[in-house]
Length: 282
Image 1: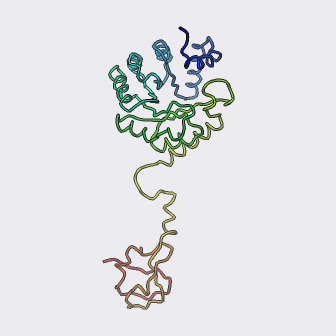
Image 2: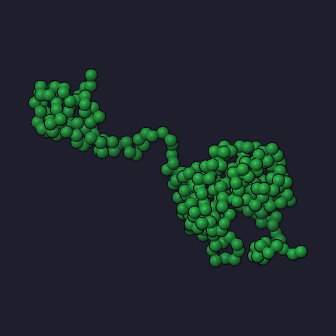
Image 3: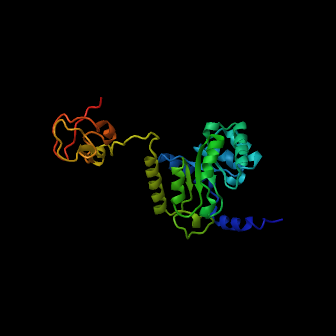
């Protein structure tokens, strides 16, 4: 019957790029990654490929968006018990939940599954990204999430990290003008490096969830905050009022938050204008 009309153009693009040394190159890539401390992930699109990748000892097995509604495939992947990265392009949340439940029922440990929010259009229009859906996946299935990005540029994956993504998938090419279906929507090396740097900075910037002064800004408190001072010369025994008090920098004296407590008290000594007052709250 021949190839379906939609599939044939893709196959015609891919055939010249596929050599007959798959095992050699896969093994070489895994060895290369391991030698450099890089975790290796790959997608098997059929049962034979899953077995092949499992035997290679890769770190993660990836489930592509197109197979998330393939029950026999999901069961085969789940039976490996390997750490999984599941991409969810074209999915409803119900389809995601069914797929994840199938994987765990087949033997995949739940705590070894990572789920990527994804849109499969290359390039993805910005208005179709819907990054908030990533949080919906995490909340619905209580699983670690990431983002598989097919937009142009690096803004969206950076935003995904700020929203909680712990994995970013982004296509990398040496040259966007190369032949093949993915190059045009990929990053070139300098762009990829810029994305990684930005992601690492965002990870640092996220920090903790407790609101306290950071070590770097603590010295600024005395400089930027203010103290209660004498607005004019104040004699010993004079009552402090709003007319003879003021608030000025630096913040090394009595805090203006004690303003009401100071008002109406009697000065225990004389003060020159602009001199910080001393006050011991009762």
